[in-house]
Length: 188
Image 1 (cartoon, rainbow, N blue to C red):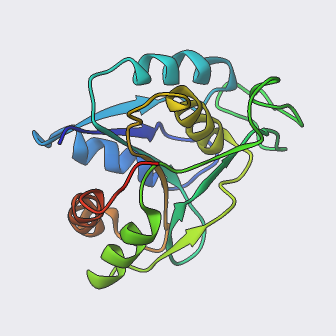
Image 2 (tube, rainbow, N blue to C red):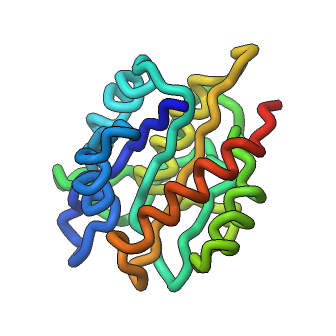
């Protein structure tokens, strides 16, 4: 199974960028491919479009989370807008990602199985039903939208990594949980 990881680049307002740290680790891993996503409203469309053209069987988007648990995002919503500026100083407020798109997409990954596998390995995790309105949700929605209507949709999930955790020690366990849960993923 060819896993592709899409990790967000360093965000200027964050002291620690777990998704970039994960990228640095994953880019040295021969079993997985990793790509860096820009923290830019102006570049996210073309970046996700290029990502979806790559040869992969499953996609994991990694973003910076909040709180003590890793959040497994079950839902991507067709909305973007926040008071947070991206790395180019652009603010996106109150727009739909796709004017003609669906209101939301569910993950094509078995998030319940992923949550169970992560917890079995001692990782604090939970399923979340709101992935925010910043670029993580934007990338997630665009990726899931790109799979919509296909007879064989690829598994896609967004993980918001907990800043309270050490990504270097958690990442091997996350990889193991992803592999185990992927075996239990039934695409609808």
